[in-house]
Length: 346
Image (cartoon, rainbow, N blue to C red; front, side, top):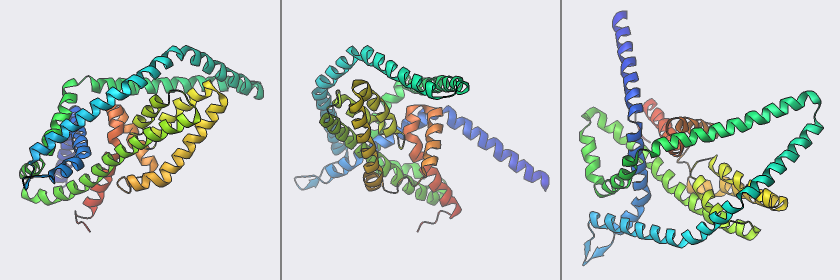
C-alpha cells in the first residue's frame, strides 16, 4: 500500500517536472500566442463594432470586418508615425547633440551631493557611503544589462514576432469555430472546468489589455501637455517614453518618471522640482481615480505580489515577461480559487 502511494507520488513529481521543462522550452511559443491573444483582445471591440454594420440589409462577414479593421489600424498607425516622425526626430537629434552637456551637468551635480554628504558624516561612515553608492550604481547597471539581454534574446526570434499579428488575425476571424475546436480536443470530464477557467481568463486579459492601452494613451497625452506647460524641453518625446513605460504595472510610471525628472534637474533645479511635483500629483490622481475606473478589479492582487510576478517575468522573458506577468499572476490566483471551490461559479 505504501509502495503504491510512493510510486504515484514519484510519477506525479516526474510528470510535473517534465511538464515544467516542456513549458520552459516552449516559452517563446507560449509568449507568442499570449501576445497574439492580447493583440486580438485589444482589437476585438473594433471588430465587434464593425460586425454590426449592414450592407443592403445584410451583416458584414466577419472576415471582411476584421480585414477592414486591420487595414484601418495600419493606415492610422502609418499616419501617426508620419506626423510624429518629424517633431520626434528633431527632439531626438537635439537631445543627442546636448547629451554630453547634460551628462557633465549631472556628474557635477552628483559629485556636489556626494561631497556634501561626506562632509556631514563621520570619517568611519564615508567609506561605507562610497561603497554603498558604488554598489548601487553597479546593481542598476547590471539590472539594465540583464533586462536588455533578455529582451534582445526574445527579439532575436523574428519569426515569432512576425507571426503575432498573423495569429491575432486568425484569432479574430475564426474565434467561435476555434473555441469549439479547442474544446473538442479535451475529454468530456475536463470541458466544464476549462470553460469556467477560460471565462475568468477572458475577463482578466480583456480588462488588463484594454485598460493598459487606455492608460498608456492617457499617460502620453497628459505628460506631453503637462511638460509643455511647465516649459520642459523634448515634451513630445518624453511623453511617448512615459506612455510606453506605463505598460508595466506599478513600477512603470516610476521608471518613466526618473529619467525625465533627472533631465529636468540638469536643465534647471527649479524645473526639476516642478517636474517632480507634476509626476507625484499625476501618480496620486492615477492610482486613486483613474486606475480603479479603467482597470477596476481585473487585477485583484497586492502590490507586493505584482512586484514578485514582475521579477519572475523579467527573469524568464525580459521586458515581454514583465508585461505578461501581472495578468498571469491574476489568472493563477483565480485558478487556485476555482480549484478550491470545485470550479463552481457564483
